[in-house]
Length: 418
Image (cartoon, rainbow, N blue to C red; front, side):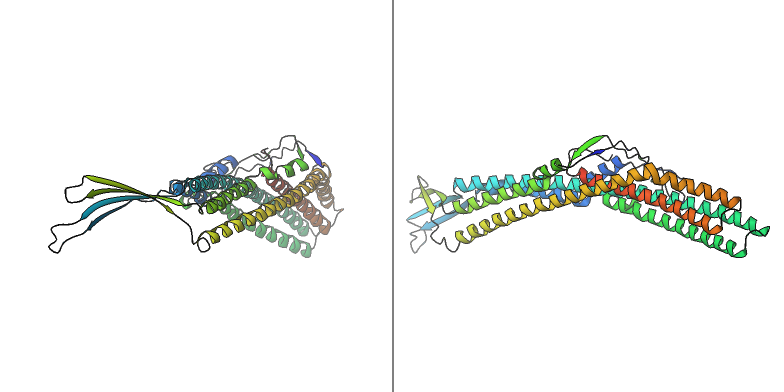
């Protein structure tokens, strides 16, 4: 049994930003992560389509009662050549019914099918919520990249200004100034690319949510603090919950529905019922009545009922294999996600305890050394790149850490990312 403690990690991975002509300081309508989740659950087209499948199943409930439309007929016989007299004329109303046991099995099958669709909706909701949270985290990460690239540009600008001043007094060479100008131009390009990536990621979130195009505005901004409670997660406990997952329960309900269908197919060997009632006239008005009760005997069993029974049996076996496949897939995903979470947690600890402080200290000391003429331009550029790479890796590790928790959240009853 493997256990890990999610330490209290309150990472103010906070973004309060908007975009209007590449200006993240502009603010319009706020969309939090909870707002995004609620909107997606309500408006996502795929989820709403699945809800309509549930309505379709409910609509077919009464159809499964096995009560067919009555047949009304008129008969006249024994008519003479003149057409004025007859031996008998009558009105007949007939009604056909499935054998009651078949009706019971069909109704149970429909009920189980409704349950299966309900679980599928729950499973789809879980997957959608995870997609929304991942997309939101990607969006926050994209904004952090804008901040990082903006910092890179400021560092490049300061470096360019310092090198230019040193070149003017003859301390640095024209080659050093050229290097600084190239680095500054590259920083400008990377900042523009980070804006583009931010826009793409934002529209990806809008698409997942199912937001109408007219509501997808540049003035929409996003702000949230993703924090984690101190909670113990047990890998074996997560695996033990596989059979409680909506997708697995949906497969069980669907298998139950197919079992009822198979039983209904067997019950079709029992005779259907048919009733007829007559109003009879033997020449003195409709003063007589009659009735008839009949049974439909399935003597052509080999051609009609047997194929249905075989097909139903094959579907039951097929679902048993699919259920096993789901169990193994969930187990694999949970174990991989768990190990990915452990690795991400270790990475975060290293960044928090060691790497970030040292990279910041390296940049500070190198900048001071270059100003004092003790450090070369190449060393200063290397220190800047190390600092920026460390910051970028930190945000990437934090993003991946969230991704692992979002995935684990699907299999647990705890909300880990909010």
